[in-house]
Length: 274
Image 1: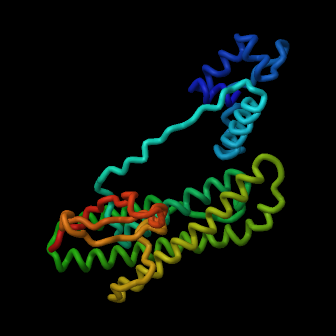
Image 2 (image 1 turned 90 degrees about the horizontal axis):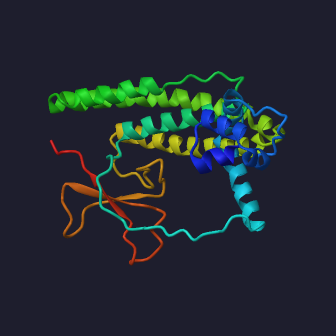
């Protein structure tokens, strides 16, 4: 039924109605004519319990089985990899900290949905970090000296919030390690994958916190500086000849070793000079 829902782009209500009234779809879903079709709430609960990763894995297995049985024709996929220059968000310390809080919180919630770490208390601080980011925006409208001091104060506040989030997430990571190994069934792979994702993300956020402390101390030359949590291997470059002086350039780590024929740069708007 989930395959039919995704392939035909149906809502849960429409899916239940179509399967109930179609003999062919009942046969496909292995639902006898004298049995009731699972209702909408049952399907939603199963999807939430197993998580989107498990549902996607089941759909992939079903498609692969259809290809092996020659019921589905495998087709080639052509992807346009043209790189278009476009402005993206400037990588500030407070912006990276806010991204880290959102990423860690999202992964912890998904981990708890599959039954891992639910016993450990975790406070959602995404609204608090949003208020800090908005406060920075308001402060930058003032005078330069006052804006710099306000930016420093809000960055320290964001750093404290991130420390609290990382501390609670690390507790969940340690206490749920044994639980992840005991999970059986469809949720096992999803739980292990989310646990590893949380471990990797916490390492990145810890590096961001360390470089933020150095920035607050006045250190400007930081080796292996992280400029993006979504692409940790990316690097920032100053504008070269023929490029706008009010931009810096972000080189994606996924393209760095592909040679000169590729154009992996995305333009990154620099904050106005004061």
